Image (cartoon, rainbow over the protein chains, first blue to last red):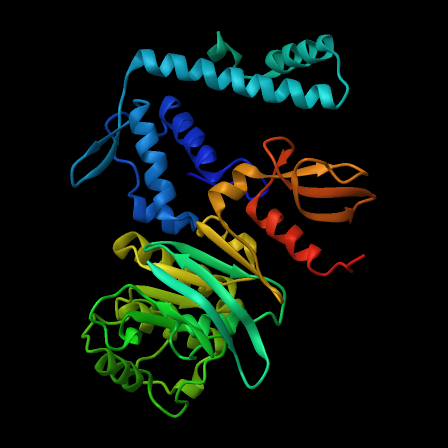
Length: 129
Length: 267
């Protein structure tokens, strides 16, 4: 379910692009499935339809979506592409986590320590290996 | 393209706005905002061709159009529609005037509006919804919406905005709204015209504003950049500047800061 973070200064098309990419690599939007129509998504989120069109076109040029004449945008599956994107997204999340932690005054050791503790406690950690 | 050239408008001797000029591209979604009493609604009436400018002109760019109002859907800030009429009679009157025969109005059922009820029996919100669906049903090239949706409860308001966005997706009309509730429409509009007593303070695309309007916190006024607004906030001095450096802001925050600056005393 796509959502706009109302408090964020990140432009709404950036937010949407990132969420859709995440949805594709996580399998929420399965390969070959049809994306919500521009009309549907725009009205659901109260966003200018041109913004949604721009998001879809950019995702198409980056290889995540494919437009089919008359029937909308479909999810493309390319394993190589997906691996790359997962890595990029992980790096982005890590950067965000690190910069926020530094703002709060934590040391690198404390961050690493916290992550290892959390990983040990996570019940589904066999999945991560 | 709609062209306003040197428009002066108002009632009686004192014009509300003088020598206003701006263009609106086809398919643009424009927000007109600014403090109370600067003539936003008056300007919208001029755009609706309901109020004629005392000087200057407005060109809609629609060739061979005798009366531009046939292509305009205008939702005023107060609805003084025929109270004793029934919903269906008013709808038919409207469609006859516009020479259209549309499908039944989609929103009525969802807003619990009975086709046979009298206008006077509708709530303020229901009236606004009815009026909105009525103007959308005539397929206008130009949709003008005054602040009226503020009186509608959140559920019906969402519904109204959803319908408006669907119309935008289907037919790409030009939309101009007078608005003070920024959060609700900040992702809908692609241009903002900020009006003050002395004229247009700002007329920019939202894309430009999001890219270039930045927040700088400093005791001294930043140099070598255009400062749009300054305010004391939370014990520090904030400047809204046109720059590539500084904190990026949401459109609603940019406009709220501009609004604040219009209330500050001139030194």
